[in-house]
Image (cartoon, rainbow, N blue to C red; front, top):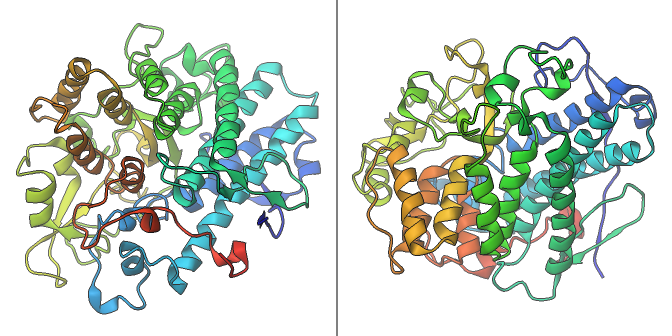
Length: 483
């Protein structure tokens, strides 16, 4: 039997305590677990370190956002002349055995498991600690379990089976311990059972101890100690953390992947209907005014967004630096079907290029995230969206009766400033897939939607897709060259 192997656990990061805002300070030093967990602050520092470590795979232009998986979903143009050596060309053509792709997969794979092992180190420390206030310990545990589930889930979505036909093959290790033994691979069923258990426990803990259940995001995103009962930084900026509603959103995403539409709808509706202490919706769909505020990631939709210090976007309106582009004519006619009034179409720049005839388009989702250039009034837009409210609407549309689906679809499309053509049994899947592409362009989710639905003809692809394209081989750094 194949075994999962690691070279060793990386050191947890520790941070100075004089940060202006939680999750915004770069690492100052590294420390061992024994020293880290000798103080209350050490537990917070460990959790911060895990989130910052996640940036390696979940920042703009990294593999699991606008780069790797989005090239695999055919969302960006690649030049055939560079095909034999270019990573992105090989990804777009699903040539996973090329040296460049294997190297990129290996880096991403190790980053994910390092996050998991650091999370397990924190969970181990929590299980024996006696220095933390109960609510701090339980909230930290809930976040850590949710991170572990989130990270494992993206691994199984990449390297695991098409979920409608999982079979009994073993795929990956679901790692819940920290030791030097080899971790055995799990079947899809066993893996997902462990993942679901983590989510269920995280949900239970955070429902009880997360302040986001009682207070609005606007309150929690204000100046530190805005709430008397929560005097520490730890309790604020919950949208940048795996909070209670992020867990509900991840539950909906996971249940849908597993084909459990009843529970997927249950969790998605819980998020959509969530209200704050004033009876106002806790999350709201993005609107046109967000764009004028240079909040291109629709922060009001974020159930979970990963905070980044800043990101200098190369996709400028001048076009001279653009690296991820698509033919503008294709974008308008094939994807938006000439509905350029769609709010999401405004999230693209028009660029000139020598790569093909006509203008190119590049995303502006991550524009104006550099501190030196940002004019946004809300610094929270330095967050990369990982779970958004709009996905909950798409899940409700897919999992509801046709009458209810049309109600959600109308609300959703109205927010995007376009009319809703009635959904039917015939057009539902194709309409949903088109909405997933428009909604999550440059967010890394499109490939997974294609895989879950078993789509054989991706938009803008020149070849059909099936198991060979959707089930990635483990990198040779993991297998030792054997598959």
